[in-house]
Image (cartoon, rainbow, N blue to C red; front, side, top):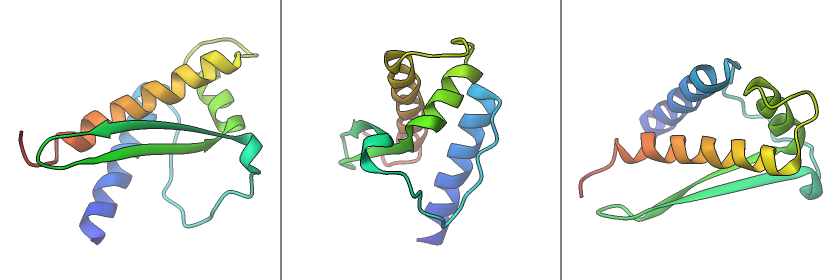
Length: 102
């Protein structure tokens, strides 16, 4: 199980660096954010493996991500959702490439 966790951490770190030039670090700390301040995106994976990749992030982090993506100093909620959805899609694609075909 540890190898899967390590690979997922590597994927996420690489995506945040490549797409947003932001540093992501694995942590065991759970966010103290309230449910109202969280954003979630989910990508379904089907084939030999059936499951989903879910990103659950504080909205302030998504605001920082939208800014890093060049969407201005005060990104809209729609822009923040777009960034989160794109990160989920990229992450899902990377995860899927490690799963058995088809």
